[in-house]
Length: 399
Image (tube, rainbow, N blue to C red):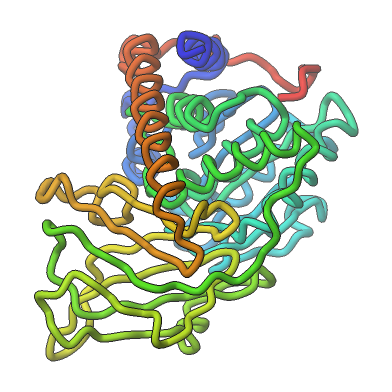
Protein backbone atom coordinates (compact mmCIF):
# COMPACT_ATOMS: atom_id res chain seq x y z
CA UNK A 1 0.00 0.00 0.00
CA UNK A 2 2.72 2.47 1.00
CA UNK A 3 4.99 1.53 -1.88
CA UNK A 4 2.06 1.85 -4.27
CA UNK A 5 1.57 5.47 -3.18
CA UNK A 6 5.21 6.32 -3.77
CA UNK A 7 5.25 4.44 -7.08
CA UNK A 8 2.25 6.36 -8.40
CA UNK A 9 3.83 9.62 -7.32
CA UNK A 10 7.07 8.72 -9.11
CA UNK A 11 5.15 7.79 -12.25
CA UNK A 12 3.32 11.11 -12.20
CA UNK A 13 6.54 13.04 -11.71
CA UNK A 14 8.15 11.12 -14.56
CA UNK A 15 5.50 12.71 -16.80
CA UNK A 16 5.67 16.10 -15.16
CA UNK A 17 8.87 17.47 -13.66
CA UNK A 18 9.96 21.04 -13.33
CA UNK A 19 13.28 22.85 -13.61
CA UNK A 20 13.56 25.68 -11.03
CA UNK A 21 17.17 26.60 -11.77
CA UNK A 22 17.65 30.21 -12.79
CA UNK A 23 19.71 29.20 -15.80
CA UNK A 24 16.63 27.62 -17.32
CA UNK A 25 14.86 31.00 -17.13
CA UNK A 26 17.25 32.82 -19.41
CA UNK A 27 18.34 35.17 -16.64
CA UNK A 28 14.86 36.72 -16.49
CA UNK A 29 14.68 38.46 -13.11
CA UNK A 30 10.87 38.27 -12.88
CA UNK A 31 10.82 34.54 -13.58
CA UNK A 32 13.45 34.07 -10.91
CA UNK A 33 11.26 36.09 -8.51
CA UNK A 34 8.24 33.94 -9.34
CA UNK A 35 10.27 30.82 -8.62
CA UNK A 36 11.24 32.23 -5.22
CA UNK A 37 7.60 33.04 -4.41
CA UNK A 38 6.69 29.45 -5.32
CA UNK A 39 9.23 28.24 -2.73
CA UNK A 40 9.18 24.42 -2.70
CA UNK A 41 6.21 23.98 -5.03
CA UNK A 42 6.80 22.39 -8.42
CA UNK A 43 6.35 24.72 -11.38
CA UNK A 44 5.31 23.97 -14.94
CA UNK A 45 8.25 25.02 -17.10
CA UNK A 46 7.70 23.88 -20.69
CA UNK A 47 6.40 24.97 -24.09
CA UNK A 48 7.19 28.60 -23.30
CA UNK A 49 5.21 28.57 -20.03
CA UNK A 50 6.58 29.16 -16.54
CA UNK A 51 3.75 28.82 -14.03
CA UNK A 52 3.21 27.89 -10.39
CA UNK A 53 1.19 24.92 -11.57
CA UNK A 54 1.44 21.15 -11.17
CA UNK A 55 -0.38 18.20 -12.70
CA UNK A 56 -1.32 16.24 -9.58
CA UNK A 57 -2.73 13.64 -11.94
CA UNK A 58 -3.13 13.76 -15.69
CA UNK A 59 -6.51 15.44 -15.23
CA UNK A 60 -6.19 17.38 -11.97
CA UNK A 61 -4.12 20.57 -11.85
CA UNK A 62 -3.13 22.50 -8.71
CA UNK A 63 -1.96 26.08 -9.13
CA UNK A 64 -1.51 29.44 -7.45
CA UNK A 65 -4.02 32.27 -7.88
CA UNK A 66 -4.26 33.65 -11.45
CA UNK A 67 -3.38 37.29 -10.82
CA UNK A 68 -3.41 40.57 -12.68
CA UNK A 69 -1.76 43.95 -12.24
CA UNK A 70 1.39 44.22 -10.14
CA UNK A 71 0.73 40.89 -8.45
CA UNK A 72 1.09 39.15 -11.80
CA UNK A 73 4.77 40.10 -11.72
CA UNK A 74 5.46 37.55 -9.00
CA UNK A 75 2.45 35.22 -9.14
CA UNK A 76 0.70 33.45 -12.01
CA UNK A 77 -0.32 35.95 -14.67
CA UNK A 78 -3.98 35.30 -15.45
CA UNK A 79 -3.31 35.92 -19.14
CA UNK A 80 -0.59 33.27 -19.20
CA UNK A 81 -2.89 30.84 -17.38
CA UNK A 82 -5.62 31.53 -19.95
CA UNK A 83 -3.18 30.87 -22.78
CA UNK A 84 -1.91 27.70 -21.11
CA UNK A 85 -5.40 26.23 -20.75
CA UNK A 86 -6.49 27.22 -24.24
CA UNK A 87 -3.36 25.74 -25.81
CA UNK A 88 -3.33 22.48 -23.86
CA UNK A 89 -6.97 21.84 -22.91
CA UNK A 90 -9.17 24.03 -25.11
CA UNK A 91 -12.86 23.50 -24.40
CA UNK A 92 -12.14 20.88 -21.76
CA UNK A 93 -11.14 22.70 -18.58
CA UNK A 94 -13.04 23.90 -15.53
CA UNK A 95 -11.53 26.14 -12.84
CA UNK A 96 -12.32 25.91 -9.11
CA UNK A 97 -11.53 29.00 -7.02
CA UNK A 98 -11.23 28.27 -3.29
CA UNK A 99 -10.41 31.83 -2.20
CA UNK A 100 -12.97 33.64 -0.07
CA UNK A 101 -10.82 36.76 -0.19
CA UNK A 102 -10.65 37.30 -3.95
CA UNK A 103 -12.20 36.44 -7.27
CA UNK A 104 -12.09 37.29 -10.97
CA UNK A 105 -14.62 37.37 -13.78
CA UNK A 106 -15.73 33.88 -14.81
CA UNK A 107 -15.51 35.04 -18.42
CA UNK A 108 -11.71 34.91 -18.06
CA UNK A 109 -12.03 31.13 -18.29
CA UNK A 110 -14.93 30.70 -20.72
CA UNK A 111 -17.43 30.96 -17.82
CA UNK A 112 -16.35 27.56 -16.55
CA UNK A 113 -15.52 28.67 -13.01
CA UNK A 114 -16.95 27.36 -9.75
CA UNK A 115 -16.36 29.03 -6.38
CA UNK A 116 -15.92 26.92 -3.27
CA UNK A 117 -14.70 29.63 -0.91
CA UNK A 118 -13.18 29.31 2.53
CA UNK A 119 -10.63 31.43 4.37
CA UNK A 120 -6.89 30.84 4.27
CA UNK A 121 -5.55 28.55 7.02
CA UNK A 122 -9.06 27.30 7.80
CA UNK A 123 -11.25 24.34 6.84
CA UNK A 124 -14.12 24.19 4.35
CA UNK A 125 -17.65 23.64 5.57
CA UNK A 126 -17.70 19.85 5.77
CA UNK A 127 -21.33 19.45 4.73
CA UNK A 128 -20.52 21.19 1.45
CA UNK A 129 -17.51 19.05 0.58
CA UNK A 130 -19.48 16.26 -1.03
CA UNK A 131 -21.09 18.84 -3.31
CA UNK A 132 -17.64 19.98 -4.39
CA UNK A 133 -16.33 16.47 -5.05
CA UNK A 134 -19.51 15.52 -6.91
CA UNK A 135 -19.16 18.57 -9.14
CA UNK A 136 -15.54 17.69 -9.95
CA UNK A 137 -16.54 14.08 -10.60
CA UNK A 138 -19.41 15.10 -12.85
CA UNK A 139 -17.13 17.28 -14.98
CA UNK A 140 -14.40 14.65 -15.30
CA UNK A 141 -16.80 11.86 -16.22
CA UNK A 142 -18.62 13.98 -18.81
CA UNK A 143 -15.71 13.71 -21.27
CA UNK A 144 -12.41 11.77 -21.08
CA UNK A 145 -10.57 14.92 -22.21
CA UNK A 146 -11.97 17.11 -19.43
CA UNK A 147 -9.58 18.37 -16.75
CA UNK A 148 -10.01 20.45 -13.60
CA UNK A 149 -7.86 23.30 -12.30
CA UNK A 150 -8.06 23.90 -8.55
CA UNK A 151 -6.47 26.86 -6.82
CA UNK A 152 -6.43 28.99 -3.68
CA UNK A 153 -3.98 31.85 -3.16
CA UNK A 154 -0.71 29.93 -2.90
CA UNK A 155 -2.11 26.77 -4.45
CA UNK A 156 -0.99 24.45 -1.65
CA UNK A 157 -2.97 24.11 1.61
CA UNK A 158 -6.60 24.75 0.72
CA UNK A 159 -5.94 23.33 -2.74
CA UNK A 160 -4.47 20.19 -1.18
CA UNK A 161 -7.44 19.62 1.13
CA UNK A 162 -9.90 19.61 -1.75
CA UNK A 163 -7.74 17.59 -4.13
CA UNK A 164 -6.96 14.96 -1.48
CA UNK A 165 -10.66 14.57 -0.67
CA UNK A 166 -11.44 14.11 -4.35
CA UNK A 167 -8.72 11.46 -4.68
CA UNK A 168 -10.59 9.60 -1.93
CA UNK A 169 -13.95 10.28 -3.55
CA UNK A 170 -12.96 8.89 -6.95
CA UNK A 171 -11.29 5.83 -5.45
CA UNK A 172 -7.71 6.57 -6.47
CA UNK A 173 -6.80 6.22 -2.80
CA UNK A 174 -8.60 4.48 0.05
CA UNK A 175 -6.86 6.16 2.96
CA UNK A 176 -6.35 9.83 3.80
CA UNK A 177 -2.69 9.19 4.61
CA UNK A 178 -2.18 7.97 1.04
CA UNK A 179 -4.02 10.87 -0.58
CA UNK A 180 -2.22 13.49 1.51
CA UNK A 181 1.21 11.91 1.02
CA UNK A 182 0.69 11.55 -2.71
CA UNK A 183 -0.38 15.18 -3.05
CA UNK A 184 2.61 16.33 -1.01
CA UNK A 185 5.04 14.27 -3.08
CA UNK A 186 3.74 15.54 -6.41
CA UNK A 187 2.98 19.19 -5.58
CA UNK A 188 6.17 19.99 -3.65
CA UNK A 189 9.85 19.13 -3.59
CA UNK A 190 9.89 18.61 0.18
CA UNK A 191 6.65 16.61 0.56
CA UNK A 192 5.01 19.40 2.58
CA UNK A 193 1.67 19.70 0.86
CA UNK A 194 -1.12 20.10 3.43
CA UNK A 195 0.65 21.00 6.67
CA UNK A 196 -2.04 22.61 8.87
CA UNK A 197 -3.28 19.90 11.28
CA UNK A 198 -6.97 20.88 11.10
CA UNK A 199 -6.92 20.81 7.30
CA UNK A 200 -5.35 17.35 7.38
CA UNK A 201 -8.00 16.27 9.91
CA UNK A 202 -10.68 17.27 7.40
CA UNK A 203 -9.26 14.78 4.88
CA UNK A 204 -9.35 12.03 7.50
CA UNK A 205 -12.94 13.00 8.22
CA UNK A 206 -13.69 12.56 4.53
CA UNK A 207 -12.12 9.11 4.63
CA UNK A 208 -14.60 8.20 7.38
CA UNK A 209 -17.41 9.70 5.33
CA UNK A 210 -16.44 7.63 2.27
CA UNK A 211 -16.29 4.46 4.40
CA UNK A 212 -19.86 5.11 5.50
CA UNK A 213 -20.96 5.87 1.94
CA UNK A 214 -19.56 2.58 0.65
CA UNK A 215 -21.44 0.75 3.41
CA UNK A 216 -24.65 2.60 2.46
CA UNK A 217 -24.63 4.39 5.79
CA UNK A 218 -25.05 8.07 6.55
CA UNK A 219 -23.22 10.41 8.87
CA UNK A 220 -24.69 10.66 12.36
CA UNK A 221 -27.36 13.39 12.47
CA UNK A 222 -26.19 16.93 13.18
CA UNK A 223 -27.54 17.09 16.72
CA UNK A 224 -26.14 19.90 18.91
CA UNK A 225 -23.91 18.70 21.74
CA UNK A 226 -23.35 20.66 24.92
CA UNK A 227 -19.70 21.42 25.65
CA UNK A 228 -18.97 20.86 29.35
CA UNK A 229 -15.27 21.59 29.77
CA UNK A 230 -11.90 21.84 28.08
CA UNK A 231 -8.75 20.63 29.80
CA UNK A 232 -5.25 21.64 28.76
CA UNK A 233 -2.45 19.31 29.86
CA UNK A 234 0.29 20.38 32.25
CA UNK A 235 2.62 21.49 29.45
CA UNK A 236 0.07 24.01 28.21
CA UNK A 237 1.28 27.38 26.97
CA UNK A 238 0.08 30.36 28.97
CA UNK A 239 -3.40 31.30 27.72
CA UNK A 240 -6.22 33.27 29.32
CA UNK A 241 -8.71 33.74 26.50
CA UNK A 242 -10.82 31.33 24.50
CA UNK A 243 -13.05 32.05 21.51
CA UNK A 244 -15.38 29.46 20.01
CA UNK A 245 -16.87 29.87 16.57
CA UNK A 246 -19.75 27.63 15.54
CA UNK A 247 -22.30 28.21 12.84
CA UNK A 248 -24.30 26.38 10.22
CA UNK A 249 -22.19 25.31 7.26
CA UNK A 250 -23.88 27.57 4.75
CA UNK A 251 -22.60 30.52 2.72
CA UNK A 252 -19.20 32.16 2.89
CA UNK A 253 -17.30 32.16 6.14
CA UNK A 254 -15.45 35.27 7.20
CA UNK A 255 -13.87 36.81 10.25
CA UNK A 256 -17.06 38.87 10.72
CA UNK A 257 -18.69 35.80 12.24
CA UNK A 258 -16.34 36.16 15.20
CA UNK A 259 -18.54 39.03 16.37
CA UNK A 260 -21.21 36.56 17.39
CA UNK A 261 -18.78 34.00 18.78
CA UNK A 262 -18.76 32.88 22.39
CA UNK A 263 -15.76 34.13 24.32
CA UNK A 264 -14.45 33.44 27.80
CA UNK A 265 -11.59 34.77 29.87
CA UNK A 266 -10.37 32.53 32.66
CA UNK A 267 -9.78 34.38 35.91
CA UNK A 268 -6.85 32.23 36.99
CA UNK A 269 -4.06 32.34 34.37
CA UNK A 270 -2.47 29.24 35.91
CA UNK A 271 -5.62 27.19 35.46
CA UNK A 272 -5.71 24.61 32.68
CA UNK A 273 -9.46 23.98 32.87
CA UNK A 274 -12.13 25.94 31.03
CA UNK A 275 -15.43 25.26 32.81
CA UNK A 276 -17.97 25.87 30.07
CA UNK A 277 -21.04 23.96 31.29
CA UNK A 278 -22.71 26.99 32.96
CA UNK A 279 -22.81 28.80 29.63
CA UNK A 280 -24.87 26.09 27.88
CA UNK A 281 -22.78 26.17 24.71
CA UNK A 282 -24.41 23.92 22.09
CA UNK A 283 -22.07 22.95 19.26
CA UNK A 284 -22.98 21.47 15.89
CA UNK A 285 -21.18 20.79 12.61
CA UNK A 286 -17.96 22.80 12.11
CA UNK A 287 -16.41 24.38 15.20
CA UNK A 288 -13.29 26.53 15.62
CA UNK A 289 -11.49 26.96 18.95
CA UNK A 290 -8.96 29.76 19.34
CA UNK A 291 -6.77 30.15 22.43
CA UNK A 292 -4.96 33.43 23.10
CA UNK A 293 -3.28 35.46 25.78
CA UNK A 294 -4.22 39.07 26.36
CA UNK A 295 -1.72 41.86 26.70
CA UNK A 296 -2.19 45.61 27.02
CA UNK A 297 -2.77 46.27 23.33
CA UNK A 298 -4.23 43.09 21.92
CA UNK A 299 -4.62 39.33 22.15
CA UNK A 300 -1.81 37.06 20.97
CA UNK A 301 -2.95 33.90 19.21
CA UNK A 302 -1.23 30.87 20.79
CA UNK A 303 -2.98 27.92 19.13
CA UNK A 304 -6.28 26.86 17.61
CA UNK A 305 -8.05 23.92 16.00
CA UNK A 306 -11.12 22.93 14.02
CA UNK A 307 -13.34 19.91 14.63
CA UNK A 308 -16.56 18.66 13.10
CA UNK A 309 -19.22 17.42 15.50
CA UNK A 310 -20.32 14.62 13.16
CA UNK A 311 -17.14 12.77 14.11
CA UNK A 312 -17.09 13.27 17.89
CA UNK A 313 -17.61 9.83 19.43
CA UNK A 314 -18.80 9.17 22.99
CA UNK A 315 -18.74 12.86 23.91
CA UNK A 316 -14.97 13.15 24.05
CA UNK A 317 -11.98 14.09 21.92
CA UNK A 318 -8.30 14.37 22.73
CA UNK A 319 -5.98 16.30 20.43
CA UNK A 320 -2.21 15.91 20.70
CA UNK A 321 0.13 18.79 20.02
CA UNK A 322 0.64 17.65 16.43
CA UNK A 323 -3.14 17.94 15.96
CA UNK A 324 -3.21 21.63 16.95
CA UNK A 325 -2.71 24.51 14.54
CA UNK A 326 0.26 26.85 14.95
CA UNK A 327 1.64 25.28 18.13
CA UNK A 328 2.43 22.07 16.25
CA UNK A 329 5.53 23.83 14.89
CA UNK A 330 6.79 24.76 18.35
CA UNK A 331 9.47 22.34 19.55
CA UNK A 332 8.68 23.01 23.20
CA UNK A 333 6.23 20.93 25.27
CA UNK A 334 6.07 17.91 22.94
CA UNK A 335 3.58 16.08 25.19
CA UNK A 336 1.02 18.88 25.35
CA UNK A 337 -2.57 17.91 24.54
CA UNK A 338 -6.14 19.24 24.75
CA UNK A 339 -9.23 17.35 25.92
CA UNK A 340 -12.85 18.29 25.18
CA UNK A 341 -15.74 16.86 27.18
CA UNK A 342 -19.39 17.00 26.10
CA UNK A 343 -22.57 16.17 28.02
CA UNK A 344 -22.78 12.80 26.23
CA UNK A 345 -19.38 11.78 27.62
CA UNK A 346 -19.09 8.01 28.18
CA UNK A 347 -15.76 7.39 29.95
CA UNK A 348 -15.62 3.65 29.26
CA UNK A 349 -16.36 3.89 25.55
CA UNK A 350 -14.25 7.04 25.21
CA UNK A 351 -11.25 5.21 26.69
CA UNK A 352 -11.69 2.39 24.18
CA UNK A 353 -11.95 4.86 21.32
CA UNK A 354 -8.83 6.69 22.53
CA UNK A 355 -6.81 3.46 22.47
CA UNK A 356 -8.04 2.70 18.96
CA UNK A 357 -7.14 6.23 17.89
CA UNK A 358 -3.62 5.85 19.30
CA UNK A 359 -3.14 2.61 17.35
CA UNK A 360 -4.42 4.26 14.18
CA UNK A 361 -2.04 7.18 14.69
CA UNK A 362 0.91 4.80 15.01
CA UNK A 363 -0.15 2.93 11.87
CA UNK A 364 -0.64 6.15 9.93
CA UNK A 365 2.75 7.53 10.98
CA UNK A 366 4.35 4.25 9.94
CA UNK A 367 2.66 4.46 6.55
CA UNK A 368 3.84 8.02 6.02
CA UNK A 369 7.44 7.27 7.02
CA UNK A 370 7.49 4.20 4.78
CA UNK A 371 6.22 6.23 1.84
CA UNK A 372 8.82 8.92 2.44
CA UNK A 373 11.63 6.37 2.41
CA UNK A 374 10.30 4.67 -0.71
CA UNK A 375 9.70 7.88 -2.57
CA UNK A 376 12.97 9.55 -1.51
CA UNK A 377 11.70 13.02 -2.38
CA UNK A 378 15.06 14.44 -3.36
CA UNK A 379 14.52 17.09 -6.02
CA UNK A 380 17.79 16.34 -7.77
CA UNK A 381 16.89 12.68 -8.20
CA UNK A 382 13.38 13.34 -9.48
CA UNK A 383 14.28 16.12 -11.93
CA UNK A 384 14.38 15.53 -15.66
CA UNK A 385 14.25 17.55 -18.84
CA UNK A 386 11.20 19.39 -20.09
CA UNK A 387 10.99 16.88 -22.94
CA UNK A 388 9.67 14.34 -20.43
CA UNK A 389 6.52 16.38 -19.83
CA UNK A 390 3.80 14.59 -21.76
CA UNK A 391 0.79 16.07 -23.51
CA UNK A 392 -2.15 15.08 -21.30
CA UNK A 393 -4.96 16.50 -23.39
CA UNK A 394 -5.98 13.09 -24.70
CA UNK A 395 -5.55 10.98 -21.57
CA UNK A 396 -8.54 8.75 -20.82
CA UNK A 397 -8.20 7.62 -17.15
CA UNK A 398 -10.52 9.42 -14.70
CA UNK A 399 -7.69 11.05 -12.80
